[in-house]
Image (cartoon, rainbow, N blue to C red; front, side, top):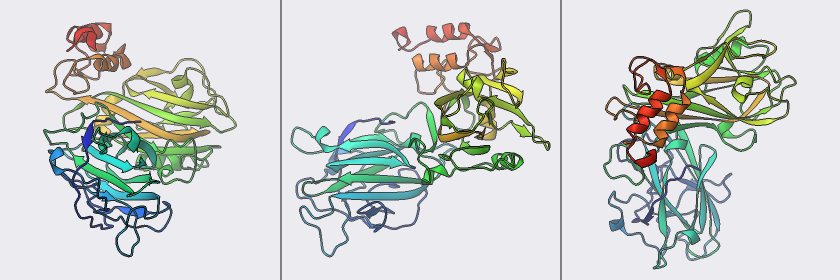
Length: 439
């Protein structure tokens, strides 16, 4: 669960006026704050959606506007159809909240969105179909008996474009409420939490192959669509659907600042082998081609990523390290021996600004999670994830590309400038670590 927590006291309430239109994110935005702009509430999460009610009356828990220097833009909210104002113990005791919005890039990259959240008595936060964070009031009470909010960096689960967040909250006591206040802090000197060094892009919903969810229908580049069209008669299917001579395709959008260099990237695929013959299944990507005769070239065999032939009916967490991608020149009926070459495809992510992933033809996909780190020309030598320190995380990035060719003469991983990523680069980086023992 990607949660970065710092306790911060609840903030001040303001009138909740809700509109159902989506907004684009801008600097210092109230994009997701409970002050309004699109929050809907439902008693069951299925129907009965109405604008969330706020400020929900609570004579004991009134947020303090002076405890958060960034200012307060949210209030306590709940589901209330009226008439009049709710009182203590007014039903329902469980409420669902939903917010759909459009996230725009800032300076070519995904902005950081952090939320302060709290609830009486508990809540679960789901982002784009994936459970992401939870809150239990009993775990966050101050000595004076007042609740504390926690800061949650939602950035890894958000994506550029359309997003949806859902909250399920339950309270069996009195004065039910949810508090949710968000901040776009990309350009702010005051941060609630440190930005995660890696950018995470999640496609799918990590629900162990439960089908027909909103997250199971993926965005695809034209290249993926063209590949799937040429794969006929193996029709395309959505995620979480069993694959029998069928393909599952998706596209991760890549967003890094202008001039940045990607230093590592890996894909985690949660898959299940559902075809009759699975030991020859492959991944096609940006550089793959399907000829008019139906022959797939430049493919990645699951066999090479797993280290053994996949077995029918088995479930795997498949890791693809893009800094050391094992390629086979063509897909073949039987996968044997070593791959034809091992290449670094990280520069492709910068040039294409996307990663295409297409699995064929007996591979069921639950989710695809892309993790990317990058650095800039202003970073210190060895700071490969641009977090202001040279430490063990940077060593791990080097190890991901060990014994491969450098991307070019300016590859920041090639510290000794010999054209290769080797143990000598690791040694040079460790010598420059910011802390003893490179911690």
